[in-house]
Image (spheres, rainbow, N blue to C red):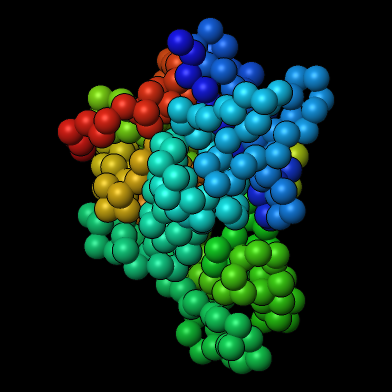
Length: 340
């Protein structure tokens, strides 16, 4: 009997647009001989599924079921492809935990923690060979004095970004103090990001993104890294999603020692944060020092055709359909004995 998959997408933030594209790609790749796939859209107003005939079916939130022509449909697993809130901040995971539906992503606590960039940096501090940029975390109460606080603690240039945002929405690079206030306002005002702003000192170097997942056997599998080279000032929303603005090299041109060191760091991050499913870690390799600097971790990485994870899956010699099936089976099966 085919497993019933709720492919959850949409969301409450500006990343919803990307979520729909990611979910469409995942649905296209999933093996229809093994899975019955039901896209579920979550918005601030409603949760629903649209049938192949165009009928909109509301989700019963008491047990996450659908009533289709009098037949109550429940799911074997939720495949979460919802970037931003509530899919990436732990809210959806907490709900699914309460009603007993397994899912493909990190758990509620890990998801909530990793949406907070500064808190994540505090937890991963001390991992061997991993460095973090000097930073300041600003809360809503700090807004009037924010520029002064930044100048007192950090040295230009800065990266200014919402502490709980994604897809580089609300993010700016500040090279002069005259640009700081506008960048702070942009980050504070980013929708549904908690009114917290993280300001970091800029790290000069090459930028990389690298995926990792735990398979159904409990093994950690690190995917090949991708190097990001953009014509933009930094890897912002447009650079991520507008064709032609960024060169993405997969697998990245790293020495064997650098590959081994990066792989060990990413495994340690995954274990330290108690991750599940697939995640993606972004980092800099600092010019002149060869140090790996942590940027952030993404627990619901983009899955559009041009996204990093699909690129890396192909570079590892896997088919996307097999990779997504591995995530589903790992979520459904009893927890295996974990291996690092």
